[in-house]
Length: 300
Ligand code: ZN
Image (cartoon, rainbow, N blue to C red; front, side):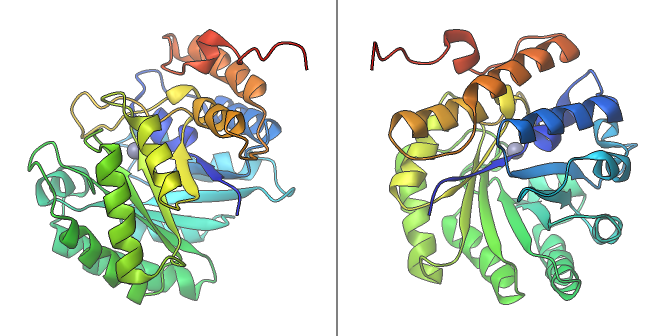
């Protein structure tokens, strides 16, 4: 299987920006990403717009995005009410997120880990009953800024309950950039040992300490083929102090393409989109390829 890029810029990327994108600009962003060849997007989230105003109007965004050509849109939900809104929209998948450490989860979702697990088990069952795939994203899986190391057996124990409830995959997220490549390969191996290598596992890294792309590479070597990334390296988390963006889509795609791994996404178009976003948001983005340009290989 080829590498699967899940573009999370329109969701994770935009949710902490001071400049709130209009619905039209969100739709423009998604159009550009799709034109560049991106086929899986976490396009919206169904959260309270009073708490995260950047994510207002997911319904309106989904009504205007391009369809067909194998494009798949996921919406992120954190609660039962969010899931009910999501299921009234035209989505191809639902993503549900919770943190694996109590303090972080209470700040992010105002629930204990235990409360979130039981609520999300019901969400997984409801989404499956509605005929959609559902992926659960476990945040702070590699470390919590409030509680420190998160025992990996706890992460696996949480994943097990969602897999038993019928979720179609798990994503392990390093919300605050605590992970290192050795920890990632160890975690991926433990996950496969416990659940089998055929259970779809995705990885979601933030580049907070510069290790995002090294962690992607470690995950890939360990057998993971699905990665969340955001154009231009956009992103952060409202509840992760000083979190920086997701690992950058075009930098990750460039790495794989330079390694000879086929990913059918046009990095030049993505760097143009990132440059356009810098203008809309009014500040520079963290992506590297957009600054350096493609590798020059000489005449071929
Ligand atoms: Zn994230």
